[in-house]
Amino acid sequence: MAVAYAIILILVASISGLASGCFDSIISFGDSLADTGNLIQLSPPNNPPLCGRPPYGRTFFRRSTGRASDGRLVIDFIAESLGLPLVEPYAAWKITAEKDWSSTKGVNFAVGGATALDPMFFDKRGIQNLATNASLGIQLDWFKQFLARIPDGRKFLKSSLILMGEIGGNDYNYPLMQGNIDPEVIRSCVPTVVNYIGSIIEELIKLGAKTMLVPGDLAIGCIPLYLTQYRTSSTEKDYDPRTGCLNWLNELAMYHNELLQKELSRIRKLHPRISIIYGDYYNATIRFYLSPDQFGFTKESVLRACCGGGGPIITIHRQHAELISRLQTVVRILHCLLVGMVYTSQRPRMNGWHKVSSEDIILILASKLFALP
Image (cartoon, rainbow, N blue to C red; front, side):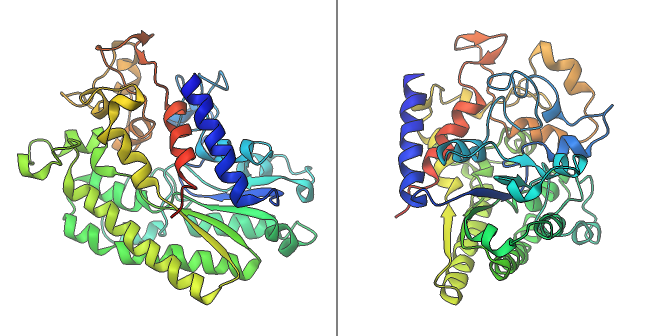
């Protein structure tokens, strides 16, 4: 816990230095890394997504809230550090129509499983099993509906911190998980994904946004699902000897991040008075794999996940085997794998779960977001 408290102090100091106490609210877009409850609100009550079931939410909220974590997300730590309440999901606002939206301290439009590009883009390419059709464009439409109910929308946006994701990772995850799409075809989609994210950023600027945080993609070559999926088709040279992660997948993420940073530079030149911050998720997360012992893991356990399809990389704990067996698609597996709850028999356990919770990991990730050059 001492380490966690130290990280909180770093987070507060770094965000406070950036914000100077001038943010009155947070507006968020993105996928499961930012969703605080939209996917669960949009799902049938009798068939909630994995993030709506235990053990999600157990360390902080003591219940499942729809967050893809056993506790809070990066957006929650940012809100707390800015002295703002946790950001409510837009779907909950729609249900409570009588609320006074003009007094809100933030609204979250992110949806777990969301893509940047429209679902039709994937349909045309035979990519199926999307967890939601609430792509970034749909989220922007929701935001415009919300903004229309604010008396002075431009003034509201001027004092708001806009969190743009992470978004775009699922545009690659879905074809990768489907398994029959040429990796070069997936890579060729990166400019389209990044350009679309850039177009949404520019539209938000036209609406009045002044400060935006835009995270990049994660080190997807370290995700246990992919390490298992591509294990039989990979050779020793395909792996990074320092981390055990798949080089070509991490190179895909780095390519996305490179183009994204170039796009952000282009937009900054067009709008020099707008503050656009790049959130380096890749280098924040790769630290766990380069130096796992610093975060309570071993070299072997950091590449394991508590759920999935079995095999030497992904371990199904017996208490959760029945739940996993009910999964209909590999999309649901991803939600569990991305959380970061790691099970290993080499370290002390709490009901089979590693003592390093996903909230601890997300807290470390949050502390790195504002470590800018």
